[in-house]
Image (cartoon, rainbow over all chains, first blue to last red; front, side, top):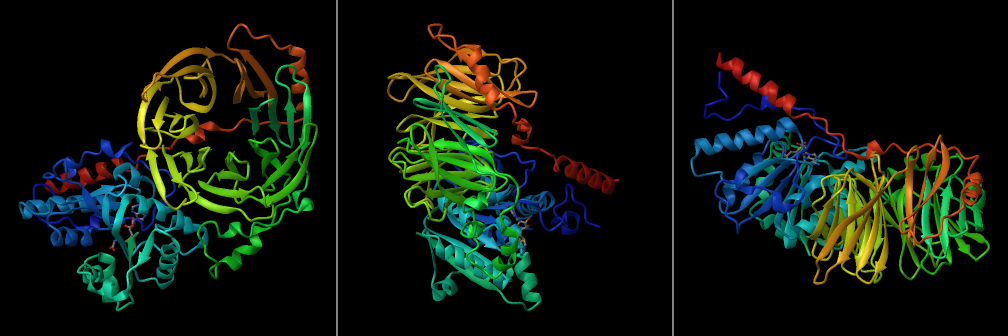
Length: 235
Length: 385
Ligand SMILES: C[S@@+](CC[C@H](N)C(=O)[O-])C[C@H]1O[C@@H](n2cnc3c(N)ncnc32)[C@H](O)[C@@H]1O
């Protein structure tokens, strides 16, 4: 039996399972900063200096598999995972803590925040702060009445464009073809994004990781399902 | 819902199905609008353009929802009223049968010239300075543009918040739309490129219920967090702040002199329900805020306030009935006869009016975290035994 406290083993997911969806529009008990100035980044990233900032955001990071990969691929950039579910975000925080203990000096560039990414991005990030945003296997919310819950929708794309710098990239991946079409439609309609041509999408070193690192992605690979990738540039 | 505002020289009061335009000094009625009982008879159609509003670019699914989008047979009742800066148009939004109505105004009468669908109950209105465009914000946080030159043109979605937008401003040069919401935010959106957010004024810790212009780059805001703040909305910087005795629900502002404004703030459930503040621009972006006085309205639930020079007009509810209160801020003002006030109240005597439950504006903070953490702690302790 693995112990959780004082031990250096990774936390077990079975203790952190939670109902798949929570309503992103309803009120939750979030403590969020009123202004990006109020965020204590040092509390999340022990080595961050005042002239450094978070540049990558994994929106709806789930259990954090991809976030960990991101931290390994870009050791000198800071990445954050945003997750709305209490247990799931707590799992990621414990996972990062355990990784830091197991590998001293590493994984100090990743952190996870429990927050509603649909509501509070401007509370955490300044205009044009982010360089990359990831939307990996977002909840599909099939019913039309729930389309406003979709993490990619017309109104929210403007908010993402606000926190993204010009030239920054938005990575989207899903196994639901309808959702993929929806994402591409709305991104292409939005004047501040353009889709990368498919050879550029393929050439991006992050692309292969999108299939395996995230828990959802790995599931799809196991089930031999289809993946739909699209990358967009903030213009 | 009532509406109350001053569109010089008229004081505009609305409740349920009626709008009256009165002389604020003697309360003589200039004109009156009674909205039609059935808006489908004057051309209200189901909102087809608006059906796409939530970003549904005409997908297969839109067909199945079409049939549910018929105009309901409910009676329309007035939500908001606004008069265009050139005084030629009066815009009215309605609940029940949801619509945006435009009336062409003459000194003595008004003619219905446009009836367009409204997607969701409105929350605020404003005209462009040239009176050619009307902005309508709604309960779900969307902001629509209604063309007021071409009355037939379909409403267009300009921007969206994730919670109700309580107030909207549009700079006189039309370059920025300023909206404030229940999620503590004031958002500055570029126009006409409304997909491009200029910035936010962040600092409030509860809903932002009202905003008003102090200068071409400065606004004042009020919030449920019991503060009134002044912002440079171009830079997003907070310039000044004052604590209020209670959460703030409504704001109205009047210029006093070149560098001075008076703000009236409707407060949530205190004994003295309206605070009067003086805001002074002391030069170089410095703003001073000072409390002048508090007004007390015992036994009335005030819902709207507005300045007419040195008087504050307030509408409210007494026993589900409309009530008008007029307070003189400066002693020099002539007292308005209660007979005249009775006459106005009489106009609305037959209307039942239930107060809005404002407590719903505050966020419900249910705590799903400490419970979870408590259980986790116990689990870990158990294992260590
Ligand atoms: C299907 S999972 C995918 C998780 C992860 N990206 C992966 O690929 O394994 C979607 C995640 O997004 C989270 N989520 C949904 N809406 C969110 C929001 N508004 N803010 C933050 N996270 C959200 C959900 O709780 C869920 O964990």
